[in-house]
Length: 207
Image 1 (cartoon, one colour):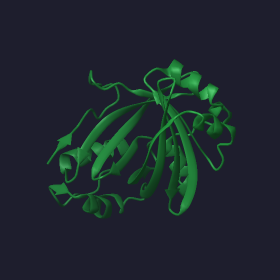
Image 2 (cartoon, rainbow, N blue to C red; image 1 turned 90 degrees about the vertical axis):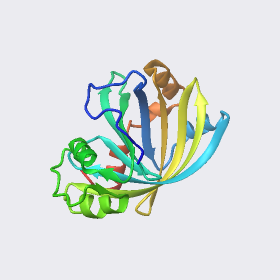
Image 3 (cartoon, rainbow, N blue to C red; image 1 turned 45 degrees about the vertical axis):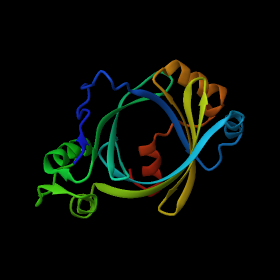
């Protein structure tokens, strides 16, 4: 089993992990902002199916793609409303109980009784996540197109969640000054900054 814990608590960082600043929005119509983005040379378009685990009492970003769990936590929000996100965990299933206990600390939800030493992804969803009234597994299909603008990573994506389709656009990089500069140049600042967790919770009606 290949499993790597980067960190599991705020304030614990590894030297080779640099948190990124991000600006994102969810909307049915990106209008002029999309025109501005598509003036630049676009990269490869990718599609993926992912499962996000949403917690009513936490804003840690927890998703599983290709049997790999990925958790990011919000570190801070600056004066330009940019959000800084830090990867804190990556690992493949099956997950041992010791790691599931740490994941539930991110969810801020009490851990249920666990009857196995480790869990496959399906077992994790049906036996650990599904019984909780505070957690919800959401299937997300993404069609993403990437751009490099001002040395930042810019993305336009079509996201399908429970049959609902919406667009999202994002700008991210380690340097917040370049991120906000790019956001303003593309006229994305005319939209509210809505991160993935908030966007998905809005779509599925979670607080």
